[in-house]
Image 1 (cartoon, rainbow, N blue to C red):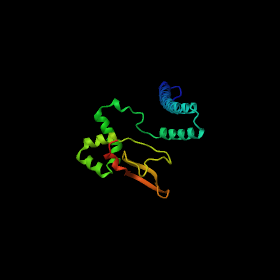
Image 2 (tube, rainbow, N blue to C red):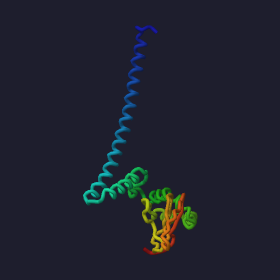
Image 3 (cartoon, one colour):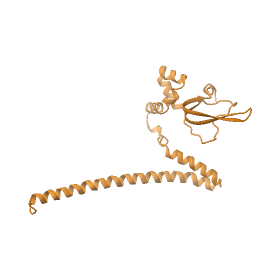
Image 4 (cartoon, helix red, strand yellow):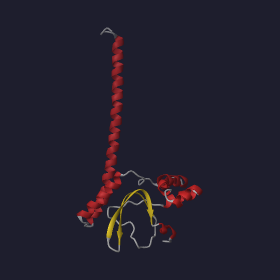
Length: 189
């Protein structure tokens, strides 16, 4: 093509404008993503501050504050439904949500598996009644010999069993779903 060609100049100009448009669009999307990440980090910092400041004002020991903040960081790093207000959705959708989130754990127990097969609506209600708990290392979940007021089901983790007769500890590694304290579902609290 001739350097003095008007067609070539128009094509070059159009390509330059298109390139600027696409680069501007890409930069805009990147800046939106960075703003969203910044907002998430600000929210995380706000939640950490809301927990740390009252602890410091109560003269809680530094070691205890550090342990609490480690657990808070662990909870904040894990994705979950913690921020979801389930009362914004219908009861039917809530039951379906609870079943999808906890049902796979409950069906491992023979009683709940049978309930799921025979009475799916009741199984959904049972899933909604279960509450999720996360425990720190060396935290007591259940004490042997005490009255069971709840059934505990595990999804993962390491659990220790302490024998009161000789104070011997043996670690039980639980991988997958397991349960204990089943009598607690038959006891009125």
